[in-house]
Image (cartoon, rainbow, N blue to C red):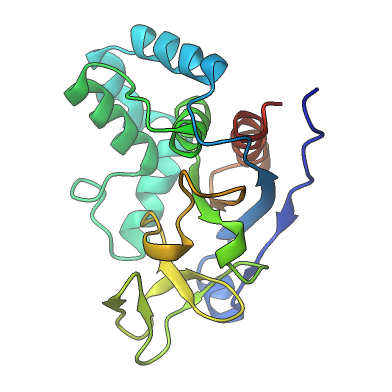
Length: 213
């Protein structure tokens, strides 16, 4: 029987960042991960989405309200969204380049499905390697993430002990969720123009895909 999905929580955004970017927020939850293999039902949904996705849709994706909101926020924080795609655009580009939605295991498939369905920026961390709750803050002098030095002031996702990754950059190293993860901390980034409903839906889709719900 499918397990009951956990409730989402609101993460902290450091006060200076919250003041500068009023719509920036972080919602998160921890979901059980039922094994490492791709879930058959999720694989089927990904295949159906790939069949329905056309080159024309890829070209117009940036005009959708959610993707447009992320692109606008990227510009605000100094990211060129034509060089570093928003999560939804990155998934769409990979789908076109590879001719489908490649399966990558339960965690990767859950994240891909949620992003395809909602266009929300969603990332997965190994819950056992993260000191929850997560937060959004500026990197401190001398901090690193995934073995790389961070410039002070870089906006990062962090836990109570360390920076985990740059904002809108998938996590790597020991904190990244993968085939070894028995539970996954899902972190969804909201920005001005992205409503609470798609963020909640993204978390729900990913949690269900992970736990078999």
